[in-house]
Image 1 (cartoon, rainbow, N blue to C red):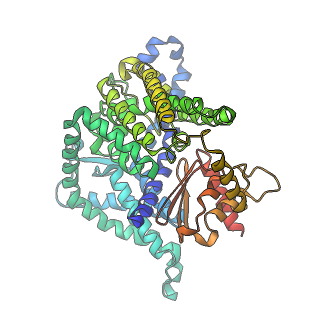
Image 2: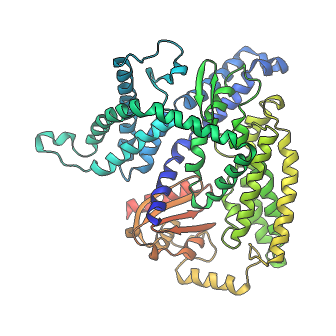
Image 3: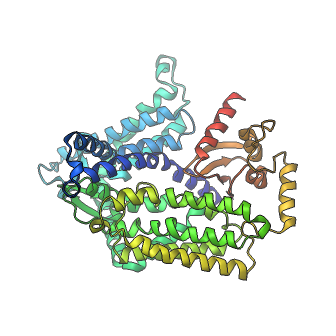
Length: 528
């Protein structure tokens, strides 16, 4: 189980590279699509300026191309994310392998006489980078990424006979990956129609469960958050037929997110896909309103002498959640000291998803449910398309629900949320940090102190204990050789909101600045 967690966290974080490009693409498509829409232009005559419309059209096209080629982006991203070294070669090999896979599928369809001449969507086919192939979607890209990463990690140091020496090492990876992609293409040709049918049936089960299914989706999504495995859970609903299938402008799209962004660029869209309300929109209620109530409850229940410190912490975490939808800094303030509060939070989040489904709130998102996505994909798209006005109404209720529930339970059970810790515990924590050679101020800000990267590495057991190091949106994700050498208090003293260790997999939650921290550590390791 512990080995599974380590592999699952590496698999989950590999999704973050392709997912990270979506906000920029969504921003272009959201603004460009919304402000070049015929109905919007008619409503706001100021937008009828020709050169302005040219700009918006270019923005919309620039955003659309990303979502139209997500499978290729995921193939490259997964390979790069899972490669232990020489990540650039892994990305190039994955791109070549993806093209070869689709070319192989095309050849098999042509040889068998199954290459559709018209109505490609009905035959489960489409044109991918100029190649008519089966619509394997993001799942096909992920498969190629996994195959490439496996071959890269196994053979990127291979030594060939001297007369073939030029093709050894990293140069061997694009060759072997492309060769393997032929067989992946043949396998996809044989099994994909059956897989596609199975996905459609699973999607039917999800639909059949109605509001209850939506509630459990939201609950399990939130419960997987602390483990960092939530990306694995929601991605099939966002990117495959499990999240629905819809024809938009003559082309079939699979997955809630793909359907939403296809409709976003379609001027004929009058109402967004209902799957958006099931698998996306509930996040806005929790992230923009519910958790703010929790933050206020934690502040109000803090000891008087600690309120100033806790107030700054909660304000920062609440603003992060409200604006960007990144919730870990706030959630991890109570997760470890009061786990059952987190279970209640997950239940409330599931209810928020269910209410979004009931009221048919169809606000999409690129990454998370914060104010930025709410404005772009809710307000700017219009009430008729999204029912966005329900969000602040339900959100006000959710704010009160979180506030009074958290305040009651914290006081009733004397939970040690921030600002309520026993004085002895605070002093012991500072003493432990000092004993580990780590400043008690939590952020290593003193100029005479050791570099933050070295302090973090020491707390992780030293450079020789690091097997793999990467990050996602908010977490440093590390595989270590000996988990016993990891000093959790030492990591928390560097500003970590929380630390999660399972087997040799370690997750250190720093918040949105984690990518900077990861780069600092890698640069320090290269210089030592």
